[in-house]
Length: 293
View 1 (cartoon, one colour):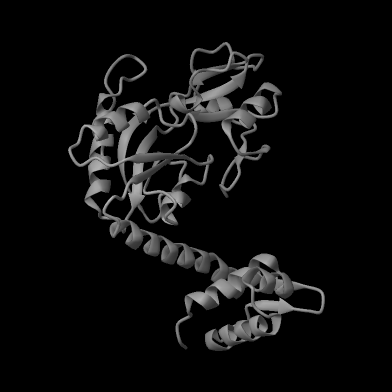
View 2 (tube, helix red, strand yellow; view 1 turned 120 degrees about the horizontal axis):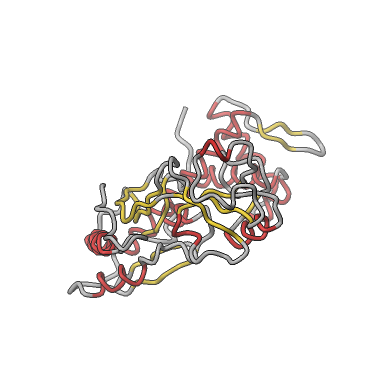
């Protein structure tokens, strides 16, 4: 069995995502018969059936689902490698940092200032991602670095350094049964409806949400509550209350970059970010927690 070529994975991914040979062929700008033959060659080489075909329907077999899942990662890796090569060869390369709007724990200004003081500092373009896709920006080469929250964001394929450690708060409507409490424990929240973040497979049983603004509206309507890092929901919305959850695992803000990216300018930015994280005042006026790898 030979290895698959990138082009063949692209062909299969198009068919698997469209579930229609005609649409996939148009998307790829190739003839439909040529696409059908290419998929047949892939199946023959792998020795498995990837698609179930009928005159009206195309569906994925378990083998096809596995190839689509891993094939997407492979295509992203190839794209990221090509982009990394282009950036490494550019003498005036600059950095791209992706963050969630309002999701920098008030660290961004300090990080950029600390980096700008370095003698070899480059321009930093700040990109804005969604609630759950910022790690993908780094993995596929759209960004060089990201500010992420653990354990919420997927760090697969990324290196990271911790910038800030903080507790979590429960966000409740003002009329909630627990709104008058000074602090809460996880047991107090048993049976409450938690939201499902779009793109995150393991979440709550409540409504699907894509950002904090949507979450805020649903909490005010009494449809859900949420448990989030304190800094991600500051300042507090006047229609909501935030209560510390004393036994919730802490949240860490990290700066993350590709495990394959060993450029000195990335390492320099990371060290500047770590320095800024150490200097960040905590909610009680103390300095930020000393980062741990």
